Image (cartoon, rainbow, N blue to C red):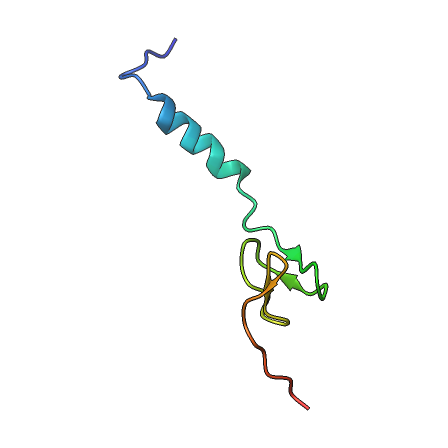
Amino acid sequence: MAVQQSKVSKRRVRTRHAANRYKGVQVTLCTNCGEPCLPHRVCKKCGIYDGRQVLTIKQDD
């Protein structure tokens, strides 16, 4: 039977386990225009964040 050389800390074990569960950043849909955008970021298409107009986006005509 193998004998453990030294104690593996909870942090090291949990970090190793968490690395296998990470799926990357989940893309969400903008509530205003429906375009895919990163969570907790201003939508690049319409410039709205949390229901407020934060950026003014120029329309390409």
